[in-house]
Length: 296
Image (cartoon, rainbow, N blue to C red; front, side, top):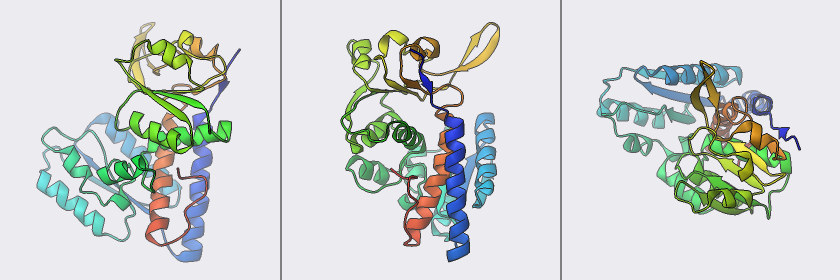
């Protein structure tokens, strides 16, 4: 068996096209332009590239982009003041504070100061609670992207056995909640799970989000299962630095029915879903119907 490759890059392009079409209608019919504000503190190189990509894709979707680049020694008082100003700005529908923040800043305090309705990362404690109780919320971008790809591949997920390997607040826990919301039977596994391989082999849907390079091997995959690899790990191989996932792609692809590659799988969906969340936040703020197919 050779697994079908789930092309996240192509899927993300389709999501961005949907977002752009909806934004164009909003601007034409309602005179409304969704706006995304991104706050970057410090000069972390990876964060700078990520923020630049977000700005480009925001513009390409027809949205307003507000970038705030602050020095690494910005005080917590000043950063909180900026967040509160963005909360009050009607042109801003989504606010994202790029993580990680410098160590002298309390990330939890900053995130929970964002207006939950504008929290397009889905990290505010109110959104976490709403998602956990099955209510309408802003959903973290990476798990939302995974869910979109699973729905596209399978249609209904009802009744499927799903195993999420990883229990982070950013991916593992919200991913499990989203799968529960789609009527899967869900198991969260982690580093202390007994006989992890056996647990994984019971999965019709296996989501790997542990941050350990190639931890999930082919002998841990149920034949025909769908494998979603959230991991992005840099390793040295053959004298070169390479990007690999949390799944050993070659051995898993020989067993699985479908699999996401790394790179080019889940990664491109994260910014696409950030745009989708900003559009959703704008529609909710203006009492307009939410975009179909772009929410949980």
